[in-house]
Image (cartoon, rainbow, N blue to C red):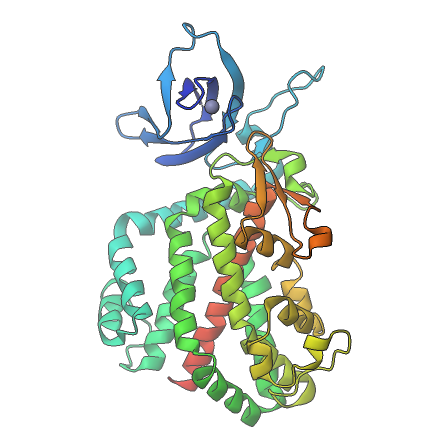
Length: 424
Ligand SMILES: [Zn+2]
């Protein structure tokens, strides 16, 4: 079912005809660019499933009657759960299919799994959300006694031993069972376990040295503070998962049906650049801060000592990195150079942590075409290249951010594993 509604931009009075796809979610956000002035028109479609009624909540536009206003400047398809196919308007013979038809064609049976996972997540939100949020807050604030009591009360534990190791393990199991509903299918086996195994290899290589690395992580990296901040980032993701839903959906598309870049064929109408860039910057910085955990493990795996950094000759700053502490305090771009020397880490991080996008986002050197959903960014600091720009589509940016958020969980899960084995 599709809900048609004309809305008038409060900034320029242009009228947009929205074709909002009504799905199975109670509330779906939308954000689209006004063709008249470039403002982002935001709102929410609320469905009352019981009474079969719809309500459109608008932030910066007003409803107008479709017939009485002939001034429609654009017609926009919106979907709360699917990517929206780009149509080029006047192309002869172009068949316009609804986002649902396009997506279900590429997802097949996986659509049922996608929907079941989102339903499972929504059921937790409906029934246990306030208790779970309190558990997360207590845990992040290191109030472990209260977190443990509340967790056991609402999420039965297999092991009732009243110690920190059991609590940490229980906490991560509960959050993992919830967050994996929102991550790509098989994410746990492909990515979360990958990092655990990588770290496990270091233990097999030199267990004593791994003990020294863990000591370093507690004393120098402040792994507990890092854990709290990572949990905060993911709590924001859990609260705003609906911004990312079309990219979650894309992760269920069959192999070969996902174009590169996504934006050449798809728009995303659940969120806009301003909202997502904070998620991008925070997840990027957090992962970079956590990298000593993995670099230390790589040093043990390949050179038997956590402090034994690989030799890279290319750059003066790089030559000065002789210990894990030097690495920890190095700029993020340098950290990435070192990660690149490890085939295992390179494979895991190859699709995330784009330093050029991060620089542009953090220094406000971006420009958005809101109708085309194309972001122009200026990644270079040196004056000779300051005006040189690159482009990324909004949906690709949201997808990269989603992949980074998933990696925040993988690294957090590893931190949980380190805490359980160190029992502290
Ligand atoms: Zn406008």
